[in-house]
Length: 170
Image (cartoon, rainbow, N blue to C red; front, side, top):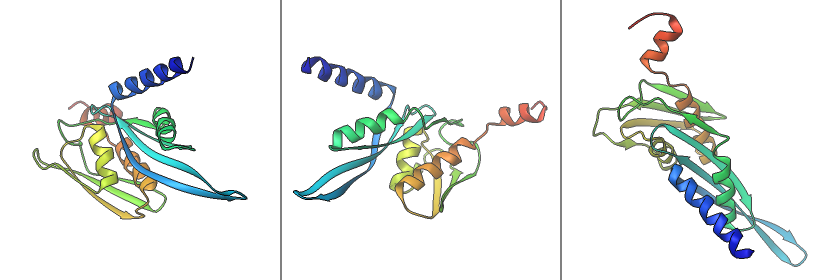
């Protein structure tokens, strides 16, 4: 029975990797002091994207690192957004906020690459954006930066979407 649960875990893990690539952004260790010593727990912040415009984030807590990462991967479905891409970049300049973290995303010419810090870079690469300039201001907390970046990506619109909202033709 233990082998069955291990196989099912591996198959579910394989499905998540087929959906996209998971990137672990942060792992933290927390200690709870009890009578016998310290009891450690771990938290994991993970970004999962299919590199074709869908990206999400998850946060998991467990007594071991692999379990925390697995819980975080399961949570990525609840916090995912669909990103409209303009070839290898984003359609327009956009700014996202979460808490005191502010992220500005600027489209770039092909061949520029992803000019960003580690946290924002992980989100952009998971979403499938290959050319973008970014600037983050305020908080450098990785969770706030991930959520601010996803807020910015959720605000993106294509020319066709804007024209349809305004009732005009291009």
